[in-house]
Length: 314
Length: 201
Image (cartoon, rainbow over all chains, first blue to last red; front, side, top):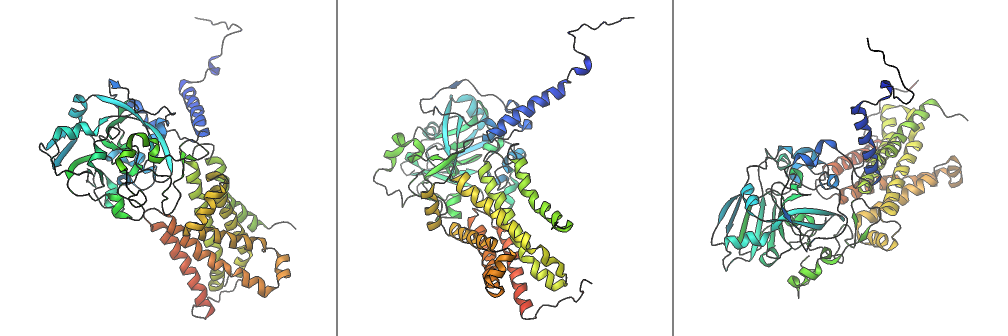
């Protein structure tokens, strides 16, 4: 029979916190800290559940500002295909099946193609691009995207001399995207760029964020990111890219032409009819900060619009 | 004078949404953009309480439950209180006293102009809500002033509807309720709505 004699320094077993409780206490503390920053934690959506991408090249276009936490980037989204509230996409986007996924590139091109996105990811050198994201609703984030220049894909399909614009389309499948059962917008979601905007090195197709493949609510498996324009231009879950001669229809412009223009360049001097665009709130901040012309990318992109009246072409 | 039990219960119930904020804020319950969410939350409760205040008179007249009039002032004051929180969120939390932006907003954007107008009405009604003020103004003038609550109801409906980006279902539901309550008053006034004569004995 083993008789245990307790020494003074021993900890009684009854005093040892079970691991589960200990971990949940850590969680509680982490949650409290995040809450103090105005962030919500949801342990069910751990980023480690998604496939890591790599190796990633760094980019000279990356911002040096503090990145918005992963939890915020993946829990506060406008993606009406999964509901109108910001929290809806994170809650509902599990119905989207991002793999396998075909992307059709066609229209005014010499070599139309249908690409498998995972194949494209495997064969394309990927870069990390840390970009400011400015939503038209006057909030902003800093997101470390993973992707490649849109221009590299467009060059591959060889645009014809007639190609002047690039039109993008999101998947249209109400089974995978239940929000499409409601007529919130004209489905599928459509966006567009002028060809010279699309060829600009800042415009990328993103396939990941924070070093891993895109979560569904952020537009898996492939989305556009145009950092000098309001966020709604950066169309998600793309299935079709079409080069066209005429300016394409775009979802928000069709829905409210007086509020959302085709260009939608970030511009602190041109207000939205219902709010000022002069300032923005960076997610996690209390005070608003000044919004920068072209979201701070003016040195790179301003020449695209030289001579244009940006009040008229808002 | 000790407050009666029914009024105490009503006071606690109407305070609960504000007390919930004290819990939601530190726990991250308002999400990653708490100021924007708080704006919607306080606005929602202001319109709900205002609807409840507007419902008292027609409900009391139709049902004959005169007792309901006892609660009208307190509910109206709570509508003002949530409106005050809403305006506080806008002026202090969202824009931190940025007078230039706020003045421009009020001048240029109809939904904010109307919202501020509604707030001024509710402020005037709250300030003149005491028995003393009724006596000072005289019953007739007091009642004329407090009829502005109808304008506040209509203004709130318009303010909410114009502020929404997409899908105006919810503001339209609130607007329909407000319209029904105002219509009920009109019908009662011209004796077009039946009154149940079940007097509370």
